[in-house]
Image 1 (spheres, rainbow, N blue to C red):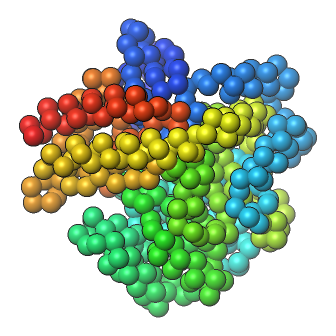
Image 2: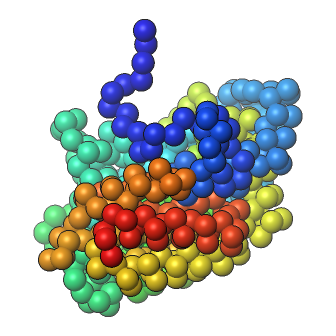
Length: 418
């Protein structure tokens, strides 16, 4: 009898029957508050009626129209709608299926357009599991272990993760920029560096926001040296942080934006956006794929964008995010085992540490498992998996946030004894 690979470790014991909004219902009828959102994917909640109807209608018309063979209306309409929300000047789009594919497409574009071999990524970043994307990922060795040799030409600079270094944010930021300049002198000369790839908020790396000074430093160096600034908005985009794009918090303009996850409310769809001028510098035939820009996924994405706008979900993410962050910090204030609580919008991470400040993986995982048994689904992240993350759908309301915080507070008390 066939079964799933034993390498697929389940974060919770839940077997889902159906989902609705912020809730998942298991096969026994138990309701769970889903504060994972499929790792930030179900932006409009589970089975939003408008998304379901758009997909249902499209399935009856056209499921697959391979987009280098024929065009279809959902693809054209989605491109038009994205043009209304993308950063100015990023008017050319390429579609794929997953975040990893978007990262690799952007890597290919950056190297071909600049004729330079190297890229710089930032410590703690997650960019995917395919070989090139995994080579660019430093949020944990589990994503690249055992598949060496990895892709060459990837160099790693510090991210201003203040809590990790034990510094204030200003000190961490100055250190990170100084080390980036040192990397230019010692590892990858600016004229051999094609691009910076960075998440505005580290995802798998521990839900650590960047900051305006650091992003300004990257933009200045990119402009000075002809380096492309690639913003990986796969997890932070589409309202998740309380602004439409995560980088909107930091007043920075990217050369390339990567999109996926919350774009289509659970249907597989990703892409990269750049200026037409930049996109045209890549080699003819270098972009393509069988399933990219799938008609049903595009229809779901159109509906998703409409729901985000019509229901004020960006604003809701900002308001509920403040509520969630403040509540999580109040719990942390009473809990010595919690070293830090941070985030932007509906990306909130709680980092567990021991009495001497070391990562406390065991307590974080115990809390995450206890929460699941209590009806609150959460995930861990961070290099040591000692950060518990809360990433609910953007439709979450104040009462649901309060319910989640009540469960979380009880769980933290039970597992830490504080």
